[in-house]
Length: 292
Image (cartoon, rainbow, N blue to C red):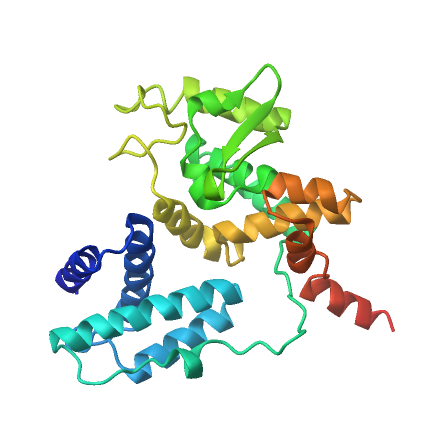
């Protein structure tokens, strides 16, 4: 299947797709292939109606954000088109109008966020240096206490961290720049990582804060994979955007005004922040009902 992905990537390039779009499509297809691999599906059938429907249900069952599911469905539709043109499959198994997740007009957005108890459990897990490296602990703290998107996270440069003012400069979507104040414990972790693991890396001269064993900059998939790998151990379905939801939700719970939360998360408007975070989480609704 890896050869098919490489051919798919080349096809997208020849179709004139942008590098970011190609990266997104290929990443989604690899995620689908990983799902098939875990189900021990036949490699002779890279895509079928059955496997697509089961994958979509898997995404829903694991409470992926609706927008994320829609994006993955769109990527697989393009992949389906590629396979059909190549003659690998005969049918178009995915119809966007039929298969995209239906959300009723006016429906509220239900935010999935970590509870305070879950945050506490995760923080204790991160203290175990036999299981969590300095870099990965820093990743979790940055996600939890800055609310950055995973792409923003891996693009943080050393120069973006100002220890004197305890501030992080984040380069967000559309070239927008915002500043986020850093907690002292986060600053301390950055310092420990720079003087410890990062200094011994062969990529210690990289301009990027987070480096991997094989590159001078971490890939966002590596972040996703690490969170997925520890999910069973901590008993939570961890993924980067969950931390962003948690960051914003915790701020609102603690009485921070919506305008400030909007600026910290880098939303283009306060209305966008309200759409995603003004609603209570599913857990909070359950607790409220149980009080009746």
